Amino acid sequence: MQKQQTLKNPLFRLVLSIFSSSLVCALTAITIALAIYMAFSSDNEQIDATEKFLSSIVGLILFMFTVYANAWRFGSRDLNLVKYNHLTYDSKRGLKAGLYAVIPFFVFITATLILSTTSTTISMNALLEASMMQYYFWFAIVKNQVIFYYAPLVIPPLVAWYGYLNGYKQIYLRDKIMLSNTKVPDTKRLKDKRFR
Image (cartoon, rainbow, N blue to C red; front, side, top):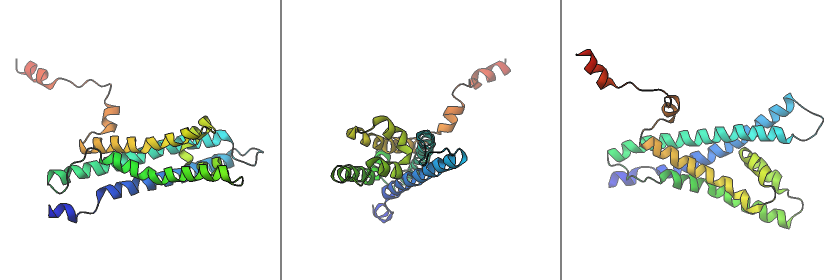
C-alpha cells in the first residue's frame, strides 16, 4: 500500500496531456488555416470558411490521434504498474481523464455564451473558433443552436477511454487496420500436411 501512495498521480498526467493536446491541435489548425489562406489568398480580408473547414478536419484528426496515442501509452504503462501491485486497476481511468480535461473548455464555452448575451462587443463564434479550431466544422453546422456547442466535448473522453483500454490490453490499432483483410494461415493444418 505504501508504494501506491508514493507514485505521482497518473490520472493528472493524462488529464494534462489531453488538455495540452487540445490546445496544440487548435493552434495547429489555426496555422494550417493561415497557411492555406496565404497560399491561395483571395480578395477577402478574412479567412474563407472552406479554409477553416479543411484545417479543422486536419486538426481534429491530429487531435484524436494524439489523445489516443497518449491514452494508449498510459494504459500500457499502467498494465505493468497493476501487474506488480503499484497501482489498482481502473478501467475508466481514460474516461475520467478525458472528462477532467474538458472541464476548462466547458467553463470557457459557458462563459463565452454568457458574455455574448450580455455584451455586444464579444463575438461568440470568434472566441470559440480561436480556442477550439479543430471543432470549427461542428460550430459551422450548428450555428446559434447553443446546446449543441457542448457536443464536441464528448470526443476527448471517448477517445481517451478507448485508447486507455486498448493500451492496457495491448491492442495495437495499427495492426488491426493493416491486417483486417488478410487471411492468417492455419499453422496447425500446415504442420499436419508436412508430416503425412
